Length: 65
Image 1 (spheres, rainbow, N blue to C red):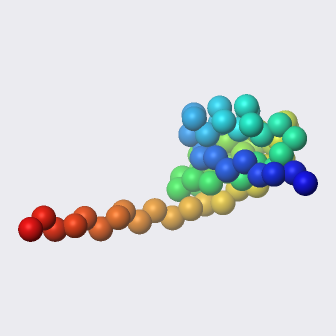
Image 2: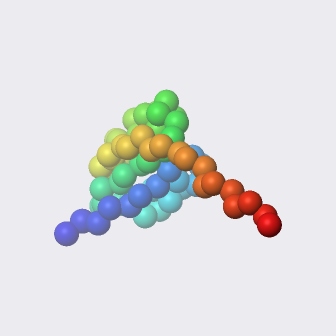
């Protein structure tokens, strides 16, 4: 069974993909769809890439008191 590697579309995510994605399906997830698609196209020649645009919702701050 091939395992998946989950990374973001930033520099660290790409570095992790290049190191850990060999022979695996890579799921790139990021909030920036343009960056996600650009990175996915760059990696598809060497890796089996799937993409997912993610949402972001900040954690509500606790009131101090």
